[in-house]
Image (cartoon, rainbow, N blue to C red):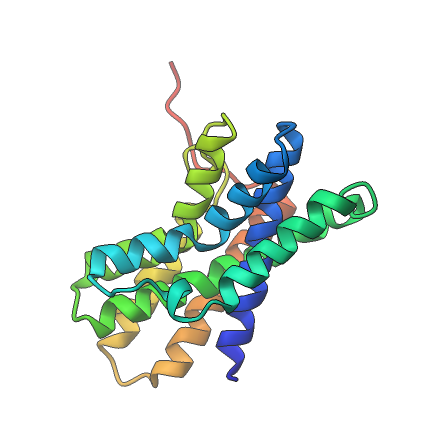
Length: 201
């Protein structure tokens, strides 16, 4: 079991928890909370695999992702009052998941010989599409369309990894640099309330 796979599972758990919390805040029943936890954790990678023609999707090849997603969503549903102290730390686990998912998505796209834009898009999609579905199902404006630095951090990491792919930088080192870039930018954005500029009316 390699380190990237462990981080991937940590990110899956964090995304599942964020989906479950969204369901609880919207007063959904158990099924709704489980659905939101599952699609948040696995939706991005599943969409990526469908677009790449890689069948069955990753979470059906390795059902560990499904078990973790459902177990975390169940834990949040039944223990959410006791787990409220985790809501803030989840932002940091989410950042780790974001960086890991970008690297995995971008790397997989490059293994399918996609070009620069395609590889970056797959990386961003892997990291953010599940959250978009979560927000839509829970009746919110998707996080990536708000002012927070979120998808832009993924774009930076995906672009950096793709550029390094065409250099002599070892693949594992390139993946690590890209993931750290995404995580660092996202954590700094959380800490300092960074936001992209908006058009003034």
